[in-house]
Image 1 (tube, rainbow, N blue to C red):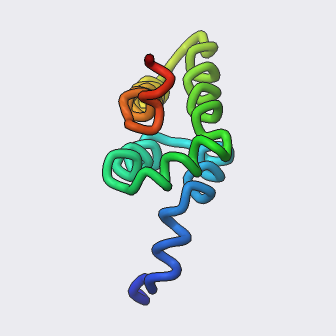
Image 2: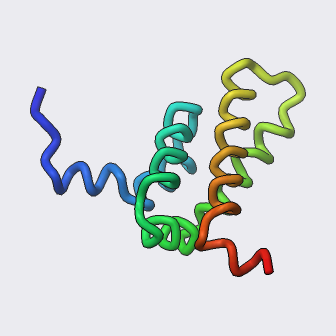
Length: 100
């Protein structure tokens, strides 16, 4: 297995990459990784994620899960991880001007 090169790691940890995954193949593991990114990366990452529609994409994940009549454990876990990401965004410095 080849080690990840720095440029590949940057691409895998980009807001675009997370957003693509949320829209195509979302699951709790990816949402946990996104949550980690939202709490550890610079403000620029959060701004770009928001500018690309990340907040709306997270709300879509929650909405789709909420509409299911029967939820699996994985559905509930994914919904909770998405809510955690939304909470992290709402509590970030990037969103604090909107709270005033």
